[in-house]
Length: 294
Image: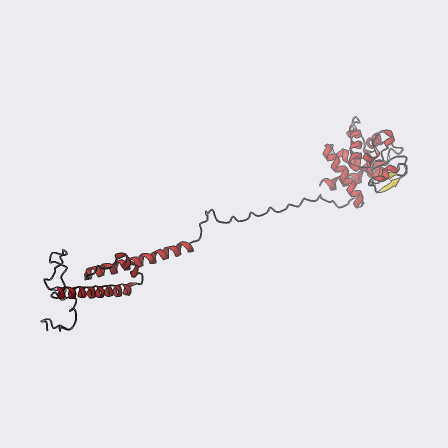
């Protein structure tokens, strides 16, 4: 029995791993490696080799158990360190270094996994080139404004009011004074009652849009103008806008027409058999012009 209370087993091939009298020492007091060979016979040498082999296996087992307790990934670190050469046992400092490396390797792997997960979950920035561009809103279709439809006044019906509006709008485009518009309306009221007439004498006139048929020679349209006297072609005189321009052009050519009474100014253009018939429509013409221009 040793003085430290440890019972020596004489039957074992090798004693405890820390006995200095059975295992050759590998450490010197100055920390350098200095193996010592025992001066024994052949049997002692073989027994020492067997003891060294068993001691090396016990050293590897203890290292594996210590590393597995830290993390399964510590095995990778142990593999990187390499096996212990036969005949050498790991001292406590070496075991601690291996455990620390295993812990650091496991921690670094954990951080790498967390970084990868964070990068995966982070949404792409707004300026990412792979971001799908939102579709541009389609421009709203703007509906064309419908022309203002004025309610009939002065006893006119819808068709008459529409024709009166065409006369006033044509005169406005020509830039004629308001008085010329009133004279033109009064004349059309007298000649056609503000309806677009075709002629029974000119069958051709009936091929164009019309609202009534008259029999006063070859007179056609709102102003009952005759193609035979040079007012224009039948197809043109059946258009309210063209017939209005023809009348206003002739009116503006009369010297001092602005100072003439309405009936005389109209008669100077129309050369009618009833020169004073236009005067009765003057008040209605004024009221219609007011309604359209207001």
